[in-house]
Image (cartoon, rainbow, N blue to C red):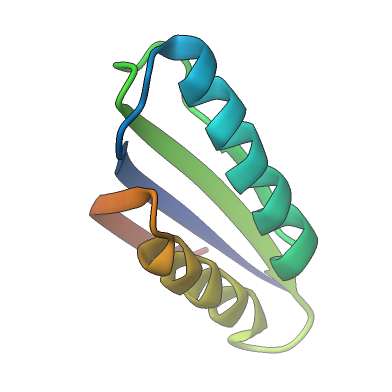
Length: 92
């Protein structure tokens, strides 16, 4: 069994406050969980226009977990309302 983690720091474009930030991040996290079958959460207490997301994936074959998280990171980078400033992927 293989485990991989992903930490992403990003900026939300045109964010209108904490409620808007929370709503938008919940939608992003929901889509990550659904489309990539990963666990994801955000770090609380950040600025209204920035966020830090954490994700983890487990795979039964070598590289499967990492591949899921790489695809999730690519999807975040392609998102029109997000700007990635840092992305760190680890195999455990």
